[in-house]
Image (cartoon, rainbow, N blue to C red; front, side, top):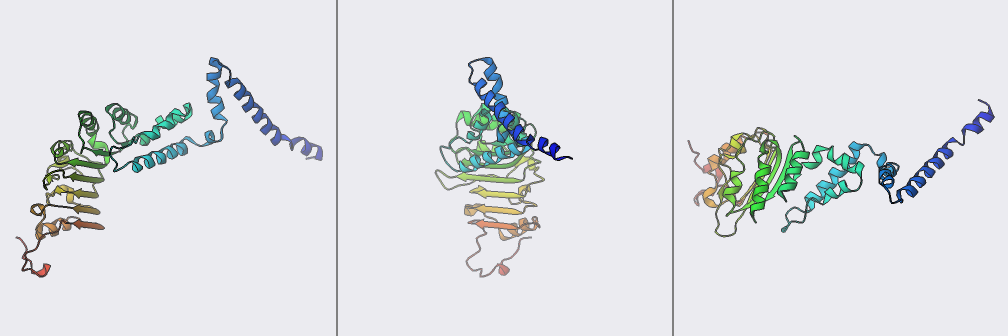
Length: 288
C-alpha cells in the first residue's frame, strides 16, 4: 500500500468518532422538541449511551445483584421498608424495562408486600424457582390474602423463610401442605408473645415430599423427629425447644443416622436432658 493510501485511511477513526458525536448532539437537540417526534427519539438517545452497549444478560445480572442487596438489607426489620425499591430500574428507560421483563429470575424474590405485586411477580417469574420470605407475626387480612396467592405455587419454591407468632402459627402451617419438590432451604421461626410454648411445625408439612431439602433451620418449633424434613440434610440448626419437645438420646441419634452427608449441626437448647445420675452419654440406656 502506498503512503498516499495510508494517509487517506488514517483519519477514518477520528471521522467516525466525530460523526457519532454529531449524531448524538443532533438527537439531543431533537429530543428537546415538544412533539411526538421527540418522544420517539428517546430510545435512540439511550441507545448511544455507554451502558446500552452491555449485553442484555449482563445488564440483567446487574439488576439481579441490586435486587438481592435491597432484599437482604431489609430483612429482619419491622415495619419492613419496601423490598421492591429495585423495581425503579424498570422505569429508567424502555430498554431497561424490556431487559428486566425478559429475565424471569429477577422476579423470584417474593416478599409478599401486596397481593397485586405478588401476583405480578409470580407471572413475570414464569416457572423459575422461587425464594419466599414472609413474616406473619403481624397478620392482616391483606397479608393472608397475599400469602395464599404465593403458597399456591409451593411446588416452585426453592427457599422459604417463614416467621410467625404463637397466635398465627396454625394459619402459617396450613400454608405448607402441598409437595415441595424443589425446596432446598427451609427456615421456620415462631416468636413467642405470651406463654412459653411451641407449635407442631414439622408434622405433615409439604405432604412429606421434599426430596431436595438440604438445609433446615427451626426456632421454637416442635420437632417430629421421624419427620421426612430431618433426612438427607447437610445443614441442621435447631434452637430454643421447650423441654417437653426435646428428643430422647435415641431419637436424636436415629435422626442423625438419617443424615449421612451432614456437615453442620447446631443444637441450642435442643439437646436431650439427661437424668441427674447420668455422668456420661455412654451410660444412657438406648431405647429398643
